[in-house]
Length: 274
Image 1 (cartoon, one colour):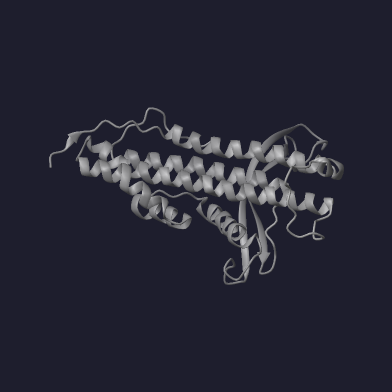
Image 2 (tube, rainbow, N blue to C red):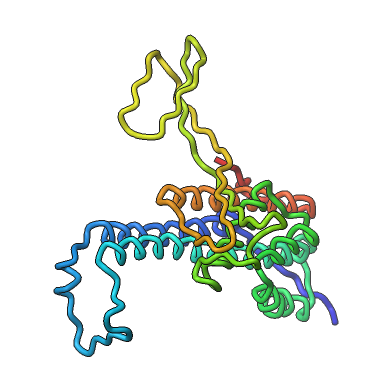
């Protein structure tokens, strides 16, 4: 079967931007619900009556403060779950881009190859487990990042949340009996211009004792959970999760571009990490 001319426009900025918009929208929704959890009163909940409301276990209702605390935990776990789901969709798109690159570089393709890349492979890749998607990107296309381990640890926590309501089981832990979750954490540091002394700025109202330069450092932050523990995220770890996935998305886009350039593809605007 002869090959036909193929003209494909590949926009890595749009690929990355779509991923970041998903995260942003999830954050926006989570923040609205978080504010609601923190401010709702027992009276407001009692006044909210729905026709046909059903109580499956009379006498087992949570006290208001307990329900509010559980609701906040549920929101934070929900963001972790949905954030990793969004990352999985991003990886699906990355895998498809990698499959398209050779065809785009060649400039021609057979109809069967186009059908395979745009129809068959997306379904196959979507069925892969999250770690398998990362492994395939690295093994087949050389696309990997220094944040893969962070993202894989977040996925382990997500698996525990989705399948075991966040209660850590022997299925979730490593050889030491620990579920380790590693985030990228943004740390603001004021560095004295005269002494070079560093002062961590982690809350409003901190005053420096000399003229200082404000620096932004990204550092690893780790949480550990044992069998029987429940995965409970702190509010600041919501942003640590976002920062981790954001840095991962940036570096994946760079790795995709490097792979494309190795095949001779030219890009109008190079991917760059902020």
